[in-house]
Structure formats: structure tokens, C-alpha cells
Image (cartoon, rainbow, N blue to C red; front, top):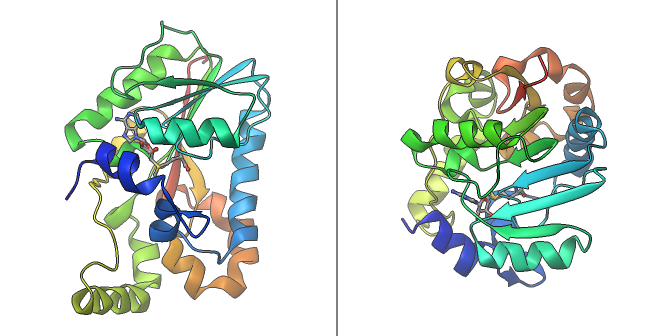
Length: 235
Ligand SMILES: C[S@@+](CC[C@H](N)C(=O)[O-])C[C@H]1O[C@@H](n2cnc3c(N)ncnc32)[C@H](O)[C@@H]1O
């Protein structure tokens, strides 16, 4: 398994036929409307802060309504692409476990799809760093992995299919460091809500029901495949 930084520098944020390799490996074109609804829900929660930090922004920074957006990532390739995709942002190379910022220096922070790629024992440090530099609210999109038992049960047929495909073609999916703590662990830091109930398998299998899922999924925060951790420092 290559290091996460090496993967994003050399492979993940390089393009193949116009699409990032990371996007090709980990997501699909199915359920774009559902994904948009989930994103817009988060966008509304964040509102329009003075200065939003998007930490581990990747190639496509969060499309916020913030007055200013500071984008940090430890991959130089991510930052170069991010600059191309969001002209009005500020871009800084940095590690989520040791942010190059003063305490309470940004209004709010968003961090999507990253903490679970940080080494298991350093994930708490990353969350504490995000909290330290933020004045108001932190929004962290996590991945519950094996702890999202309902989603895993509902998507079992596709999981078995993927597993058999992997046996036939071991290179079909990239292996990237991943560790998911449980919902209880997340709750130590703040409130757990729903970013998105389904993972890519669920989106593919239940594509016709996504309109219904998007209506009710916020009632199932601790069953969501992608829970949203909110740390509110104003309370
Ligand atoms: C799965 S991508 C998510 C990108 C973006 N947030 C999104 O949702 O599309 C993970 C990103 O986190 C970055 N990353 C991983 N570990 C990091 C760390 N310790 N410090 C800073 N960035 C990190 C990677 O370089 C990559 O760009």
C-alpha cells in the first residue's frame, strides 16, 4: 500500500481522459442529484462565513458561499489543481495533524472525506487541530465503514460482487490507508449528524429510491455511511 500523500501527489489528482484518477477509483456518475442534495444541505449549514478553512481540500475545493476560502492540503498536486478549479481561494501546503495557523484564526472549517485516511492514532490530533484553529463551527465528513451496519447489510449483494471481482482482478480497486472509528468515538468531539446515508454501493443499488432516502436520512445520523461531525465552539 502506497502512502496517502504519495498516492495523491503521483496518482489521485492526475487526470485520465479528463477525470481525476481518485474520482474514477472511488466514485461514480450515478446519483449525482442525490449527492448534490447532500452537499447543498451542508452548504446551507455552513452559510457564508468570513473565512472558511477547507482542510484537505483535494483538487476540487468545497463549493461554499464563504466570503473568503482558505484551502489546505499536504499534496502539492492537489493544491495546483485546486487553484485551477477555484480561482478566488487562498492555498497553503500543510498537514491536518499540525496546521500552520494560529488558534481561532478562521471563522469556520470544513473537512471532507479525509480524517479516515489519517493514521488511526492521529485522527484525534487532526480533529483537535481543526478545533484549535476554528473560532465558530467545524464540519467534518467522516466514513463509518464497517460501523454503518444497516448500509452494509442493504448493500451486501454488491459487496459480494465487488469482492469476487477483486479476486479475479486484484488491481481493480486501489488500496489506500483507511481506518474508521465508531460513532461513539466521533461523539466525543461533538454532535453527529448525517452528511450522506448511502455509500457508492447503496447509491448504485437503490438509485431509484434516492429521492426518498434524501428526505429521511437526516433521522438516521448513527446509521449514515458518511456521518457529519459538527463541533460548535460558540456553545
Ligand atoms: C479523499 S480526498 C478528499 C478531497 C476533498 N476534501 C473532497 O472531498 O473532494 C483526501 C485529500 O486529503 C488530503 N490529505 C490526506 N491526508 C492529509 C493530511 N494528513 N494533511 C493534509 N491533507 C491530507 C489528500 O492529499 C487528498 O487531497
